[in-house]
Length: 593
Image (tube, rainbow, N blue to C red; front, side, top):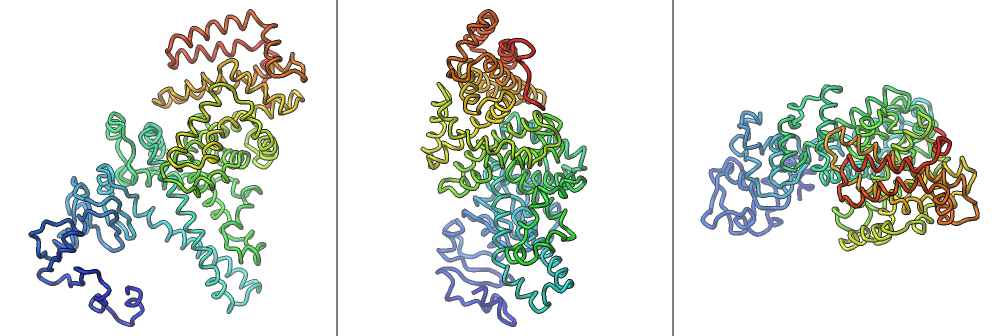
């Protein structure tokens, strides 16, 4: 009916066909003195039985305060503020009479199809009281994305028309032909952005310290204005840390936007968008008819650098997470370009995009999908750090993919057979827990097994420098891991408090030390082992030749295990004892860097 009215030359709500309205409903002019409230309207609005009429402003307030699932604001004006704000703070005098406070709302979700239907502080108050919403910028981002596609497509078509490759009369029909495909591209971008928002909300409390440091960096390095962006002060963040709560969804949405803007600025300032590997992504931005007919013109698009940069920044943040690039910079001094290169290599080597696609398409709850995707981030993070610390810099993305992808894909199916002891039961238990909540069994098993594939990077390098097969090295590596209980120590490190930046760096250093020791120990055992022997036979021979040194280290580790105290200090000692098991400087040689 609204579509019919829109198509009329002149129309108003008075032209609405009232026979289409549910029983008890109607259309009323806002200038009338009062509106009768039917029993059906009272029930829908959650009003007392004695309310039989309301003035138009009172009725609008009642609609805003209705106990419903979704309040969709598609109009003009600011209708909701925080309880700490005055109507003057809202800056919309025309709606002062109908505006309500966020802490009075009984709705579960607010969607903003208009601009500033809720004040920034009102959004935060609503979410802090259990409601769910984003920001108007995020909810309306599809419109901006659609406009970007339209402009960039028209720039391309104007160029091919000028070059005589397309007749002017064919331009508009071609644009119309691509409407549905562009709409699908835009929707996919926004689905992806909302996934990262969901995951960010799920781990908001746990990541508050990291978010605090990220906000500080954006403030000092990028000129972020916390007051303007309604981001919490240090005092508020400290209070939330004590409460065990994190950033609210609107705050995360603002943080997401600034992280993307910062990453785009850094990438545009360098040559990464021009590199062959990333520039090859450009055609993906355009609909199929343009890719098929005007491939050469696409490569010469005058905004190609900006388009590629936007694609890359969206992908890295939407899949890597809001703090991915920041943490790599904080932990190992990686630049924005470094992190993007690492992301591209790791996602290809481990086939993460395929896994993410299957997670997001899985027929299960949002919470289960979030948990599955969060688990994949552990592999992304560790493998990214590995490439940034163990391979020549800057990462040659194509070369690193060629070096590791085939080996990882070939050895991955063998890893479950190499796992021993608690690794097997832990993997089964983790998968079973999510399966019980609706996750597909095969997908859950694959996702929780993904972290066990990360060491294959070391396995492939060790096989390369020792001229042994990947299967021989892999079997020994995982056997040593279980035999020396190194993974048990790694698990204990994972359970340490994140704390401040220095605690986080200490945790990472411990983990890196243990992985480095396991790599060196594998090289050590291989140096004296027969290729024809089993992994257990190699380990037994190695132990027989190094009884004195291993005995001291094992005694110290046994004491630590039995103490039951697994804090930063004890685990640091444990890491040192593991390192002491490596014999001689020569045996400790690392893989080429």
